[in-house]
Length: 383
Image (cartoon, rainbow, N blue to C red; front, side, top):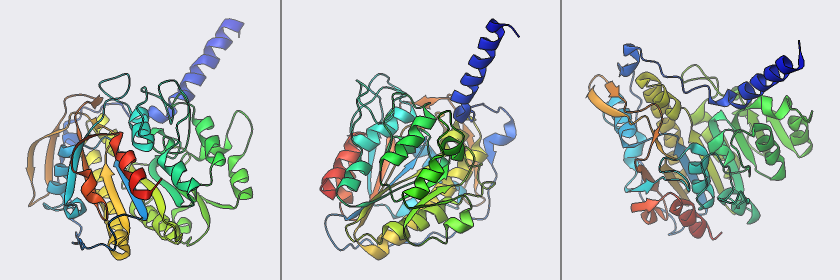
C-alpha cells in the first residue's frame, strides 16, 4: 500500500467515525412506512393544576427532537385521541432560527435552549465566536441544585451535549464525552459508551467517573434499581435502538432520574430528550415517528406524576426544531391509524410548540424565541 492510498484510507475511516452518529437520516420510501396502523392505546391520567408556590424549585425540560405540532396531533390520533400532553394548559410557540441559518440544526437549537444564546449550526454550548457560554444546567449546578440528562440517543449527541459540553463542532464526540468529567452532573442516562472507553487519547472515562463517585451501569434493569448517589447510565455502545427494540426505557429512565434528583432539598434541573422522533421524520417513516412520539409522551406522563405529587416542579416540553415537514393526510382516532406525508428529508424553519405545567407555567404562553425558554427558566430558578 503506497502512501497516497494509506492517507486516503485513513481519511475515509475518519469521516466514517465522524458521521457515525448521523447514520439515521437515510430516507426509506416504502409505502408501508407512511401509515401507522394503530396499537393498544395506553391510559392517560388527568393531573391536578394546583401547586404549592408561584415559582418552582425544580425544572424538567423535555425536548422532543424534531417535534412539531403535527407530530403531537399524530400521536393524539394514534392513542385514541388523548395523550399526556393534554394536561398542559399553558401553551406557546418558539421560533427556532440559528445564528447563521433560517433552518437550525440540533446543535444550534440545543445550544439556544441550554444557554439562551444563538449559535451557528453545528456548534455545541458556544456563542458565534465559539466562546463557551454557561448552560442552565451548569448554572443550576453552581447554585447547589442537582442536575441530570436523559436521552434516547448517545448522551454525546447534539441535544444533550449542548447542556454540558462546549465544542465548536457537534462531531467532536470524544471531546464532548470528556466534558462530562468537568462537571458534577448527578445523573445521566443514554447511549454513547464507546466515546467514554474507545478513545484516541486512550483515556477510560468510565474509570474516571467511578473515581469521582459515579456508579457506572449499562443495564436498564440495574439502572432502575438506583435510588441515591451519582449515576452514569450508558445504555448503548452508540445510539439506543429504535422503540420498541431498545433496551433503554425512556419513561423508566426519566422516573429513575427524577427520584434520585428529587432528594436534593434545594431542587434540580434536568433535560430529558426523545431523540428519535427526529430520526423517524428524517426517514419519512410514520411508524417510527409515531412510536417515538408515544414513548416520549409516556415519559412526559412520568414527569407529570412527579410534578403533581411534588407541587414545586415546572415541566416545559418543547422541540429544537421541526423535522420532515410532517403533515397528516388521513387518520382515525378510533383505530389509531395515522397516515403521514413529508415535505423534506431535513429540518424545517417552522415554529415549534411549547407546553408548560406547574408553578411558573404562565410565563411560557405566546410566541417566543427559543432563547427565551432557558432565560425564563433561569429567572424562575433564581440563577
